[in-house]
Image (tube, rainbow, N blue to C red; front, side, top):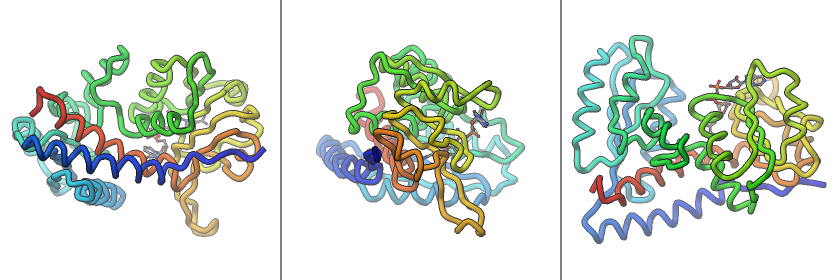
Length: 287
Ligand code: NAD
């Protein structure tokens, strides 16, 4: 069996087209969704992510502000800016691009963002709301995965879901979302014993590890749905291309559905950031 592809690129395009309509509806009500993105330092990957986020906003008519600080900025200046943005009526979403330089305590920065403008969903209040099954903002990458499972018509109720990875950005919120959707969830991580024994039971397997081709065909139950969150750059001797955490070529012969890399979860992440920003503007309490 060759697995069906769940095409994140196509889904992202469909969703972004629908966002344009929502932005136009808001504009008729005199509301203009706005996102502020704070970038500290010159990390090249962060610069690319921020550029892509700003461009994605522009493409659907969301107002965006990019605020850039040098790497040695005093965290107090960033906190003061966040406090100002928390009160700005034209800004509905605030995000601070991670990672931050050493002098920063990421927790303090994330908690400084008003919970109702925390479109990344990393604020403790929003993490708690998600854990209680009543989310305000869902972290963008796992939110994107849930949308992909929806278009793949994957019924999660009563299914075995296994998540590899327990980061605050992907693994943990992913596990909560799957749990809230009715799956029986196992979270595996670097200290898990006999990983394959867990993954082979999975009807839905989500890999968020950060290791190229880590999930091999023998770790996958025939007919499983495999979601590859990983984005890894292969070394130049292997072509320097992007590669997921899943050994795509072989796993696609075992799985029923699979997401490719690139063109899978990646394009969905910024799409869901737009969704969260527009949702924030649509909410009465922020308008
Ligand atoms: P992370 O480094 O914070 O977490 C990796 C997780 O993998 C950890 O919880 C660790 O316990 C687990 N792990 C490591 N080795 C393991 C092993 N041998 N067995 C089992 N578990 C193991 O990474 P992250 O931020 O969660 O990102 C994971 C991957 O997803 C990366 O490749 C990252 O680039 C990618 N990512 C993609 C998107 C996207 O938009 N598609 C967004 C965020 C992250």
